[in-house]
Image (cartoon, rainbow, N blue to C red; front, side, top):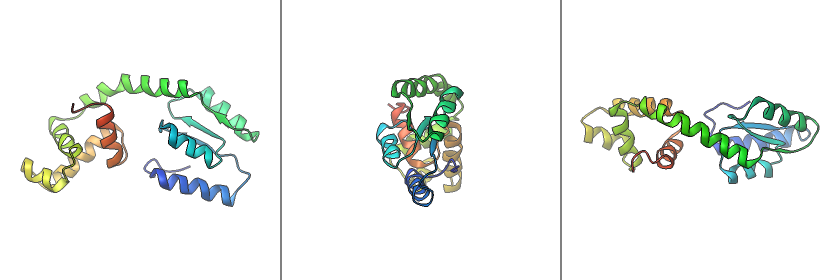
Length: 160
């Protein structure tokens, strides 16, 4: 079990550590990551299965069962992509609607590459206030770090 806020590289290192220390253990990764390159890297590190957190329970059970038998399970990419996209489409509007106008303003400037200090000066607010507003927006959008926040905003065309 890994914490939600674990960086991708930390997760990869942890998987490599587990493989070295426990070479015969079955590894099933439950993730929100849908990037095929990252998923392939997980398989390259000899995980038995990678399953989307959005996958139905029978899918997870199937993955665990096969992993327990020493087999590899690959969730169909079509299903993974469809599941993730439909979930994103249905919840994107709700998530964005929860953002306050000030949080949106902070995000817009942050995605443009402006640092917190500069945003604070531009908006005549304290650094701490800007940081709190950015963090509140991250919670509402369910992203874990700055890179994921920027990627989310760009991918979902929030400021086009």
